[in-house]
Image (cartoon, rainbow, N blue to C red; front, top):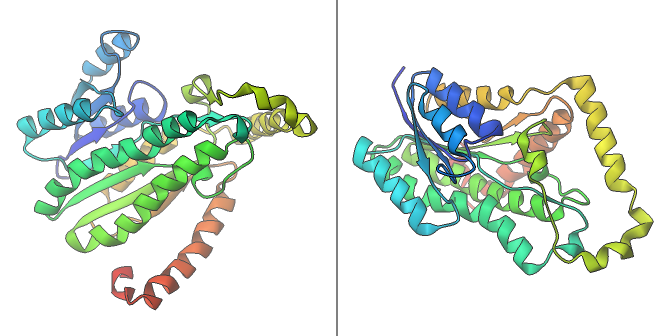
Length: 287
């Protein structure tokens, strides 16, 4: 196995924390990013720094200069980057109308623009070496937009839109772009959920005020039945990294609860997507 240089974002908790450990344990060199390495995440940064094959970088992904400085650090030490895992993200739930323009902008900045910022830096190096892998962590809500998750879903739709077109655009140049669609997992993200800032409209939705509670109850019941393990997402990342170039699927669903619904939707859309590319003279990019 060739040792790869891997950049993983959002490694202070959840999928990112597990993925950093798993990728490093596979023998790859990991650059793990998080914010506040000298503040609230100091303990996490210190612990991760003690792991073999991991270097921690303090990065604010919505800050152009911070991202560029981190990327330049990696290039100065390694000369290139082989794998980019865009894992960091934020979640926003609640009545969609309560989200202000600034709220929506914040979600797009975190879940779509920040990954693009990193992809824009990584792609030239990957193209130059005719090999590279970009893994974007999306969501099942990147396929379906659910009530009370509208803004979050929209941001993941955007990430999937970037990823899907790039998958076909870059594959002939030796670069794979893939999406992982996790379902609901018991991670720290549930403790960091954001809500719309315009609370003045919430009372207007009393007719469906009990729906979010029902969603939470259904989720908890699924957790009890399926016992989803966040490590499955980290394992999926490692599997994609170790797969041969050109054989990696566009989408990988990791969801023991509602994953079959997502898979069937992906398969159906994939057929029609192929028809669209064919209609516009791009059939050759499908193979």
